[in-house]
Each structure stands twice: as structure tokens, then as C-alpha cells.
Image (cartoon, rainbow, N blue to C red; front, side, top):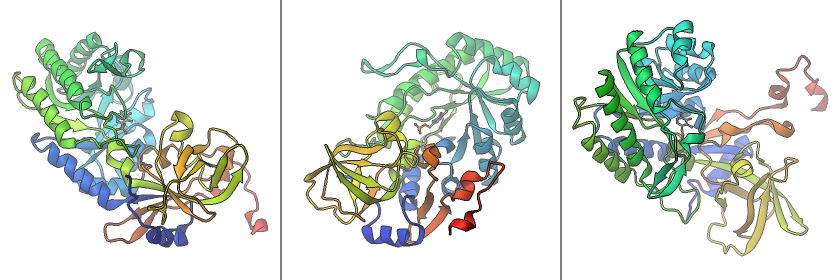
Length: 420
Ligand SMILES: *Cc1c(COP(=O)(O)O)cnc(C)c1O
């Protein structure tokens, strides 16, 4: 069973003020989960989570996570600006980008962020445009297939990211000759993983490679960046990952590799996005139409422009009809948005309680890669974002777009007042 973190009553209070569709986030859930992550990794003195800003790029979310000790993982110019505006500086910012522009490297250097280089050719590029920092990270792509228990979890050989194994050695030597003194190694080999085995397996690869690189070059490695990829149970029948089992698995790999090497001690960094936020966001939307043709449809006031994952990946997002949590799921619906795209379906052949016009639907697990992937197709406007505080109060943390926002980048602006 999946339970939404708010009741119909609370949803109605929020909607009375800000109207659907809207994204709402659960402060209590976010904070408790972050604390649990830090607790699970407390065996590693330097542990730090760099929240992947792209998952939920909202300043108030960053503020919450900063209080819990998190840094930011940025991938673009504007994400760097947001991190800086929220008071993150220096080592609190990881810049894990790819196909990076000179402008982005210059800003990252100005903020003294840790730069995570995606390619060996970027050494010269970075040197030319922004200079080589003393502390730097390299992204590793081991190629081949990434398997856990003979199951293919990812396909690094097809991924555009990272340096090959032999390039890593060359890159470390080159960077040392150009003044780099402290190194980190990063790898991201599978996404939304379930079952607790991904991080330990990844950590083994990253730690072994760090030890090898240290032995080959003498470079001082100070951290391993395990990046993102821990999954969340989108389906109600999936068990949640156990962060304590995951952290212990990483610890075992650490004991067998880093501890036995001359390095002895390095910090573990993570760049989790989905795991930090997905379960703690709901997309609230109102049923505004029902349609009976070859199938039964419920039309809602949100669409793929507010949550793209079902349309592009066929991703499952659980739906609760608020106030009908205990009703039997004896109806079968396609729950659809208004885009002129047949893929704009939040649910297909979903068993749900009877839905009446005006019912409020909570679409689950939209806290990461939800609002963030929004867009303006069909002239749709992005929704508001609301933060539900631990004490039950709520706060608008991003207003909804208006037509004026939509037209802001053109040379003409319609005379909106005529249509009021
Ligand atoms: C997307 C991304 C993340 C976060 O991934 P999740 O699956 O949301 O945990 C972390 N690091 C990098 C470099 C990414 O591109």
C-alpha cells in the first residue's frame, strides 16, 4: 500500500490557495530520509551527499538539504547560480557536467566548486579557459556491460560519459603535471536501482580503481564519488531499498580495498537525486472530465508538461484518489492529460476507485525528475510548487507560471488586460 503524505483535507486547504495542478513536497519525509542517509554512512568520517540539483531544482529544497549537511551536485550554469545563491560554496558544490561550455567552467572555478571532468580532452579545455584547480575529480566509464548477479543493470559501453580506464591513468598524470594535488573518482553505472546491491558493487569498482591509480601515479586520492542511482519503489508492491544494508555493503568494499591500501582513508561522496526527493513529492491534480468511448477516460488538469516520466519512459506512478483511500478499486481507467499527444497518460488500464468530477488525485513519487522535467509544449504553463512543513503549515516555494511568463522571451507581449 502506498499512502500519500497528506490528507484530502490538507490538500483542499492548499488547493484553495494555489489551485491544481501543483507539486507538493513533504519537509518531514525529506529531512528524516536525509538524516537516515547520514546515519547509515556515519562510519565514513568525510561522508557527504551532494544533492543532484537537476532532480528538484528549487532553492527551498536546497535550503532544507543544506541544513542537513548536504552539498549540491550541479550540471549547468544556472544550477551553479542557484547553488551559490543558496549559500553553497567551494567544496559544497560538485560540478558533474558533460559537454561543458567554457562559460560554465569559468563560473565553477570562480565558485571554487569541485570539478568532475567528463573527458580527457577537457583537461586542456579547462586549463585554457579557467585554469586547473588543485582538487579535481574524474568520471570513470569502465565500458562493457555492468551486471549484478548476471543481470544487466547498465550498459556503460553505450554511455557517452566518462573516461576509459587507460585514459584515467594518463589524465591523472597530466593533471598532476599541471598542478593538481588532490583527486576524486566518480562513476554512475545504473539508474533507479532496486535491491541494495548497486552501490556496493559500484563502490568495489571505484575503490579498486582508486587504489590502482594511486599505485600507478602516486596521486593523492581523497574521495570516491558514488554519484546517483539508488532507486525508489514507484510500484506499491516493490520493497524500499535499505540504506543501512547499502551503506554496510559499501563499507565492506572499503575495508577490502581502501583500508588495505596505502591510502587508508578517503571520503565517500554521493550525488543522489531520486532517492533524496522522489517519494516526498506528490503531483495534485483535479479530475475535470470523464469520457466513455472504447475505454474509460478520466481527464485531469495536469499533463505530461508537469510530469513527463510516464510519457517518455512509460514509467509507473501510483495514483491515490484522495478521500477514497479505502474504497474498492473496482473501476479501470486511463488517467490522461490534455496534451495533443496520445502518450500523455498518467495511468493506463489502472484499477482505481470510482472517480467523480472534482476529485483530487495524488500522483505519487513526483518529488524528483517531476517538476524538473517540465516544459511548455502545447503552450502549457508550469505549475506551482508548495512545501508542506513538518508542523502542517505550507508555503509557496515557486509560483505557477502565467501567460506573461510564457510570452516573456518574445518581442511582443499580448495585451493581457483585454481578456480579463
Ligand atoms: C542525474 C544524476 C545524478 C542523480 O541521479 P539519481 O538517479 O536521481 O540519483 C547524480 N549525478 C549525476 C552526474 C547525474 O547525472
